[in-house]
Length: 386
Image (cartoon, rainbow, N blue to C red; front, side):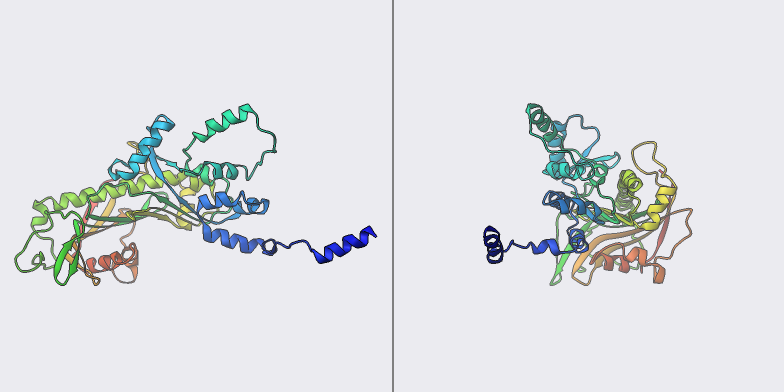
């Protein structure tokens, strides 16, 4: 009689079915790859044992860094406070030293991530556990290698710094894009002393304008007589010196980022694409599958002066326009484009079918600016290794 009642109750009140459990692992991994963010994935892995086992198989990972601090900071407390102020002051970012990464609010998810490979058995906490937990909670610094060590199948990796390393004045435009293998493969730099919006032929400066390049010429809205050549004032008013500073600073920032990625590339053999950028969109370092493999086979040459990759001897091509008006109405004052390749590499065209490596370096509207600049007169320069 009891068995009949049990059978009836099962028919009337069937056990609930979790339809999410019926989803195949491949579909859940597809969702995780769309999420990408390492913090979100760290939280996902504590939801269930199934998620716990699937998170390490994610192949598309994004690491968004909250703060960048220098290796010179001696204590965790002092470095936390100094890094918070450094995040708001771009000029204090160290571009000649190896970075460590500070992930605020990420320690607990990282604890669960660290247990993905070797989970510890459950037991009752004691006083020693509370002491160790207090001690661990003060640990807030994690290198990218530590954060990513439990991901086994990464193919696409994007790391985003909180801001660019180069401290520039408001209104000044400076962007760079660099490709690396074991050393620099190419670099494109786009700069302008000021960016203004042309509204009904009235120029509105977006930020602080640089007077060196904003010479007021009568009845032409600041446009110099432009025959495609660099004006003489460019050499006498500090314009050329400023562009040299932009170029060297961008190359140092790129080589420092490349040096930082070395242990990550060595550990993750499955990587096919690696991008290290910043939230400001100031600089982008990218490496494709062939370049990543090149670095694994041929170790990089480090600079003896600082923790960065040695920049080889370079050939550079420079284009300049005192006034460059884009189709969307934005005007670049003192617009400058620099295309850089190592001297030992064969010269590569920057216009036509082979010129896409320059024009495609930047998103719009700056890609349009690059295409407009390469049609102007080209100036060739050389730079020694440093």
